[in-house]
Amino acid sequence: MNENEKFTQKLTALLIEKGYEPKPSVLEREFNLRYYGTPLTQQAVGKWLKGKSIPHSDKLCTLAEWLGVELTNLVSEERAYQAQKAKKKKENKANLSQAISNYYDEDYLFRLFLNLPQEQKKAVREVIMAMHKAYRAK
Image 1 (tube, rainbow, N blue to C red):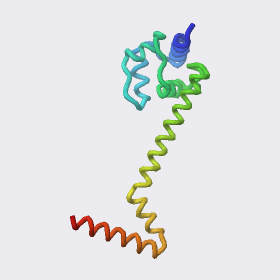
Image 2 (cartoon, one colour):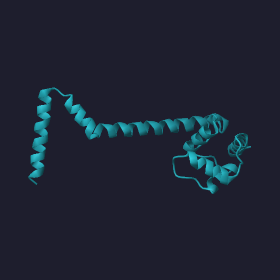
Image 3 (cartoon, rainbow, N blue to C red):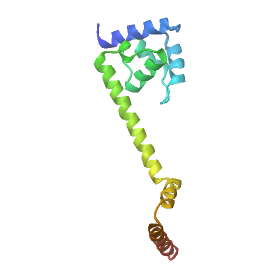
Image 4 (cartoon, rainbow, N blue to C red):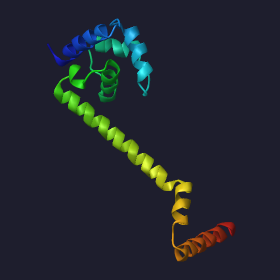
């Protein structure tokens, strides 16, 4: 039995255990209620139930969370490790984006300005005034 077939058996058993029919229409509806990416089609989730494919990392994580199981209850330890690694990388990227956004946030910059010593505030004001004057001259 290959990995796809093992995944299908585990997924089907978990769906039944949790009170869901192992049908593409049911899986599609319930999965898309919990997944924040592009919604999946019945054909896509149908491949999971037929042993033709295994979901990508983000979808595996959503399935495991929804069904209340560890990733290793759905896939091999190696694939579970890769899925966790991909999830962590995505979270780190989101945190970096938020940090960059905060860094350039005007309110944040203004709060930083207010905490500067008086001499530095004066220098910043002079730079801003010079830039404003140069911009208006255009």
